[in-house]
Length: 395
Figure 1 (cartoon, rainbow, N blue to C red):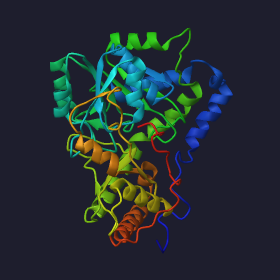
Figure 2 (cartoon, helix red, strand yellow):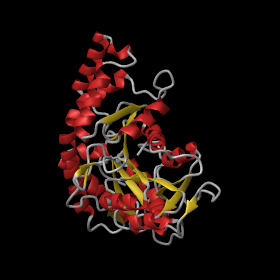
Figure 3 (cartoon, rainbow, N blue to C red):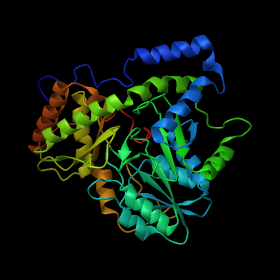
Figure 4 (cartoon, one colour):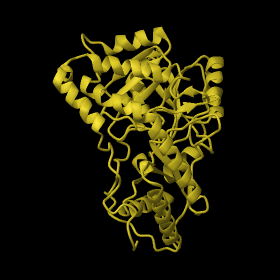
């Protein structure tokens, strides 16, 4: 597309330069804590997360992905149990269930939020149901109040995956705390980043004890280091202010795209929630004229064109609907999950930290690209170009 690129020097960097993070690294070097198994930084992080989440038990670990498995084991999931999850979700969640020897049960999504559908969860419950993974995705949230009621009635446990929304509030409670266990990710692209890392947390002492037993092999088998904990502390302090900026930018961008046919923001901000945006979800619904190609190919071509303009816009997850029935059980045809796998685009959060002028440039560029695609003039840049590796970034 001609004219000035939305970001001439490429997408905004993450993590951004931060003098407070640099100071934390230097302090860890000076006091020697960077080389300890456990020390003051890890203790401070646990205390800070206890205050943020209002839960007593925090287990830092090496990734959000292993956090899900640790949480499932803490909830007593065993081989041949069934664990419900959305048919469109982060692939590591499916694999965490398989790692235990349990069976994933796939359900469809809510057509508005594109997170799991609680009614579908009710239909999926059976005699082998032990737990469910409820993932908040792309700025939207699961109806946790209804899901909590269902779980208490049907006697299954919830792992609440808040890896994409650290610091969010869901129906009056910190994201992750509606579940019997919750998980965060501190991966390199996340709102709170230590390059790698995660945490699993719970209000239940028995769950925490089982998690600790699985984790401890003479030493922590899946540790978060002192150095990682050190760089997370200043980011935690800035999380509320950064969240305000991201929410404001998301609202501005959604309003600017409201009248743009072919790119629909996923509703993200019910009145009793305060979302956080690791990714801003957009539904692509436009094929170039005179094109019979699959909608997902058009979606991918549009994402390539946006990235050529410096906008970090990537395809969503592939979902699980192509997994064989030997690996999982599926409830119905899951048409909303199939649509999400084919049409979801996600805008990476560093853009939402930019100025209002930059957000307006993004909206203008996306509208121009939509016009080009609608007229059949959309072009595809190098398909290898991607701001974040698809299916590798932890949700």
